[in-house]
Length: 186
Image (cartoon, rainbow, N blue to C red; front, top):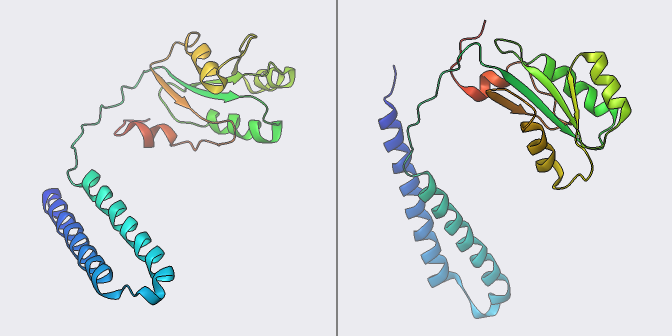
């Protein structure tokens, strides 16, 4: 039995409204009837924290009240894809598994894997040659940290899709499938 999305959305709005009403009622009772001058040193910080929590909940409900329907653009097989791995000073024990994970990312055709070395390290270049991935070292002066590294690389890479992976995060083979949306993968 499929429940229409609109009905689920209305149910969630009803639950959120009920939670806000209950929270407001509770706080009114707390402010009006539970504060005592004898225990103000303990009661006031607690009630302020509870009030702050209700304000945070109200803000969350306001942000999530109306959901926006978005259409997913379908993946076009044949799109050039690049997996970018910006690195600065990660050791080989951290960087190598990330590169191997990037090589396993599924796409049609297989994505190019780029290691963007912001340190110009010889061992990184040798590892990239061994693993048959592309190596790009940013020239000196290296300014603006990872953003500068990525901006330098974008001028060198010709791809329609970019998957940027931190050097200490190993991507799973389905990383693109999970981020792009409905795809037709071979």
